[in-house]
Amino acid sequence: MTDHPPSRRADAARNRQRILEAARSAFAVTGAETSMAEIARRSGVGPATLYRNFATRHELLEALLVDEVDEVCAAAATVEGDSPGERLMTWLRRFFQYVTTKRPVVLGLLEHTDTTDPVFQSRGRMLAAGRPLLFAAQEAREIAGDLDLDQILDLVVAIAKIPGTPEYRQPILDAALAGLHGRDT
Image (cartoon, rainbow, N blue to C red; front, top):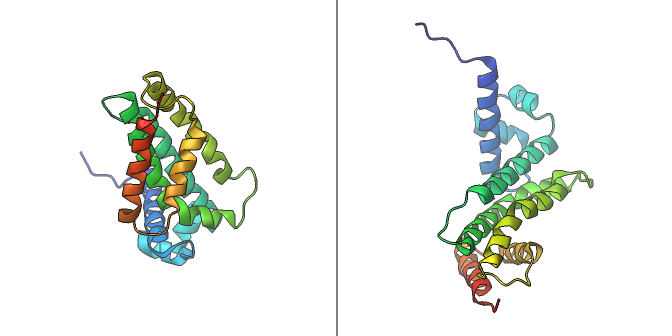
């Protein structure tokens, strides 16, 4: 059996993934102003490869957002916990992580947005993914029935916007999520 070099398609998919990972990391460190040249450098690909995968900065930002939303939505279906309430809390913590890390991507996208942009579609996808978790927790009487997922996600987003370090915000999130359990149902 002879070793064959990887197919161009597999190589292209790996390059695309490397670009997305490098861009995610770069935006987290340096913010929305990160240049395409810096992303190419961090990913180890040439500018031509970067632009072949993402013709514009906007396309790259959209791909990052869609990729992250896909991960959070998929987590809703696979989240673990001993009870429906614990599964919802685990997913809400994953959503919080998403909100705190996507900010540079969303800010970059909002510069050139229209109502068909993924920024506006992501909320609906999150709600559709998380509603079964909330419904199950409410059916188990672990979360108040008078709350809807829009309200809970707004609470999590508001906490994510509080200035300070992740270590500063984490106990605030913990207290807010514990309060959802402690409400009369």
